[in-house]
Image (cartoon, rainbow, N blue to C red):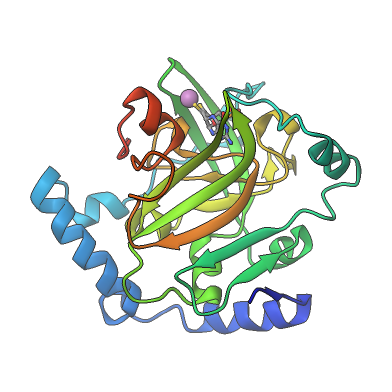
Length: 250
Ligand SMILES: Nc1nc2c(c(=O)[nH]1)N[C@H]1C(S)=C(S)[C@@H](COP(=O)(O)O)O[C@H]1N2
Ligand SMILES: [Mo]
């Protein structure tokens, strides 16, 4: 069952989370998950947990690119999306589901009422362009803690509203990127609501990863223990069809 979250209830939950957020990372269930998956990861690729958790470089307002291009899908292109755009996305919902104790269905108002993080970062697309932009939104970790991630969840899958060449765009990350402090559900770019071409009303920012790992037109966040049954099983739209690396760390 999915709970519709009233503004007040969600806020109370979120502030409780923030008060409790000071415990040492290794003492928490999340810390344990991080360390376990990092161990496995380390054996394979030799990058340390501290490196994975390091922050991406942040820039100054003066360095923001004059334009931030739209790449890949530049709209969802359906009648339903056009209607949502016209009503200011008052009917848009972001679901948090899968291996969680309390599935959530969040409105834009719910998301804007949470503590926000703003960061100015550089987006790097494998097609050979970069742009610096200022992104604002709640940290993904806040949503995950509100939903209560179950033991055994290993990946977060991001579902998108757009269909590209007959396939729904999707992406996924491991728990280290999911709980990274710069991993946010962005609803603003450069102080304005997200433009349509950049993924309105919601897109992920996963700042330690290349551009295709930042899903736009976000509709759902799904906790899973394997990626095998999602899409073609490679963890993302481009990973499934072009052999792009699932781990696209920068
Ligand atoms: N839903 C969705 N997300 C997406 C894409 C897409 O086509 N659909 N393209 C990806 C790629 S390859 C890049 S570089 C960035 C582009 O983000 P931008 O349009 O804000 O520049 O979005 C990524 N996320
Ligand atoms: Mo890209």
